[in-house]
Length: 387
Image (cartoon, rainbow, N blue to C red):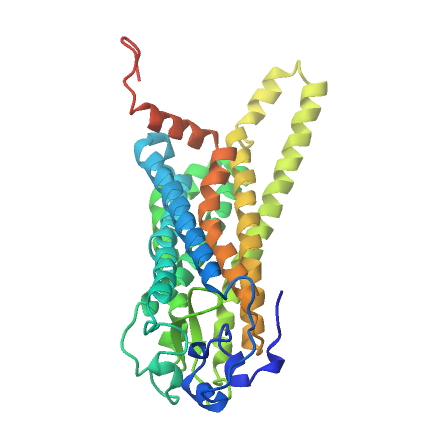
């Protein structure tokens, strides 16, 4: 499924993905190959061929539709349902906005680029290998502004917002479980909104870090991943000395995922202890109503426990979808090119943007109730029935 880059020049391997098309190479690499020579294809199933482009466009359009519709429903339920206007509800809205930005900007742009490549003979300026910056000497981005300079950081930033929001949701639920009496004091709407704003600012600053702190990177539409990716500019045939800056991305995500996992372990340990104690009380202390009732206020509610389990599922889903990207970025930095794997990795992560609403629908009773009320409002209630 994947292919190492040992059979191709180092200048080709450092790109996030390459194919047999000379347009995917830098200008220097094209000169080295010659006008009558081409590379053996590195991609077979996901990246090459007219039919595969059509299938990719159909997949992208369907995914964009699912992402937008699902997250619009989530946002509408929050706006229309007063019970959803809680700190946890604000965090869910932040997550839905980040996911919807992927469905509105990132996925449609990839579909537009693929359609452009099918109907025109000249690739756009943001296509891999055609940007002047990709063949310029080190020391500056000489190419004019192009859409990938926006789309690439948006995708990276929204990914970071998603994992930071899941981390904040985990911390909020852990407070509700471990300190139920202090939940309303510690977790307030104002603090939650401030943390959301900080997470967005920090996430997009990190997404722009390769462009802000280095002049050795540009953004191009990658032939294999079918997305706008960071591409290092070369010292002849060598990687720039600061190419490892891209490792900040998986390092940030796995740090937060590790913290989220640790908090979840603490929360679920407390839930298990509470469940066992409740089982013992139900078996041997049913007549002790006063003592049992007095301790209930110090224990997490059933909704808090279920919400913690839902967030645990969200964490698992995001970890599973991000892990292939982390492997791909690490392999690319050390000099490997995995074309087919890059397509699978990037689009698994993109597909996670429509998973959250599915998880809410299965796990969150309030969300299901809000969706039901939302669609019932379009129907006139029977005479004399209160809505």
